[in-house]
Structures are given as C-alpha cells and as structure tokens.
Length: 111
Length: 112
Image (cartoon, rainbow over all chains, first blue to last red; front, side, top):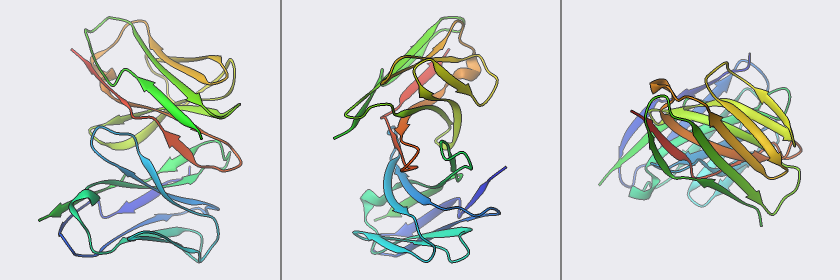
C-alpha cells in the first residue's frame, strides 16, 4: 500500500533557527498536504500542493512539491515558540477519499 | 464557512461501558466523513469513513462501530469499551474533489 516516510521524527531547535522536514513515498502523489497539530487539538491544514515543482508559502512556512512527485518538503524560517507541535505530511490514497499520513515530526523550540 | 464540531472534548469511561462520540459538520452538504484514532500523540489511524448517509466503510477490525444517521452527522460507538480503546479520537470531513481533510478538535478517551 501507499506509505509516507516522514523525517526527522523529532527536532529540538533554538528559537530563531530555520527548520526543514521532508516526506517521501514509493508511490506518486498528485497532492501533498502539510498539517500541524498542537497538543490536545486536531491537525490544522497549513499548506496544500497540487503540482510537481510547486513552491508555496504561508507566512514563515514554505512547502515544495517534489519534481518526482514522490516527495515534499516543509521549511519553517525563524522559528518561534508557537511553532511547537507535530507536523504531518499527507497525500490522497488512490481512492482519493482517504488520506495517507506520515508518522509526524515533533518540533520543540527552545527559548 | 464550514465548521466541524466534535464532543465531548474529554471522556473517562470504565471498561465494559458503552461509548458514543458525536461529530457534526456545518456549512457543507454531502461531505465525506472520517473517524481517526491517534495513540500517544503520533500516527493517525483511519477507523471509519463515510461517503453518504448510512454508508460506512471500516478500515480495521475492532471493538468500535460508526453510523451516519444524517448527512452531516457521524457517530462513533462501542457497546463495551476495552482498555485498548483509550486514545485521541478525531473526526474529519472532506470532499473528494479537493482531497483535503479538515479535523475537529478531538476527544481524549481514557478507559479505566
């Protein structure tokens, strides 16, 4: 089945540093989604990517849809304490009615 | 605009007791609806999804069931809870065309 490999599993960074995480798949995806989940809350959609090579920003967040359509990257610039949370990549399964989720990247920002 | 409501936010139940979690969506019609479970803050496991009233697909065999009595209402149930049913339960909605899912705020279930 389709699986997403997300890395790193966790990151501890200093406030102000840039962050980069990625997601890879053995299958081609037509859509890549990035979510953020804060403790005790549901995941919130950050960025949606629909085209190979697409680069999209949302404030300090930038995500890219890999050219091969088998990977995606999320970068956070100048991290702040409120960036803490778990970041998930996701992509639609073949049925397009379900999403496959990566295992998440736990981000901790140290003051 | 569309909103999704999920309740209760937290629930503590004894083993063997029944369960009913409810989710409703506003501002859209004929959404696809989903129940996910998340253990230990990581890994979203799809439990059920529904593409219409009375249509339920189960992804994993388990002690839980789901029902969709109305277009924008999705219910997760159990007749007798197990310790292993503890976890964070998330409801979500989406439309096949957009392929994006929008999540509720979750229910933290503790079975003791």
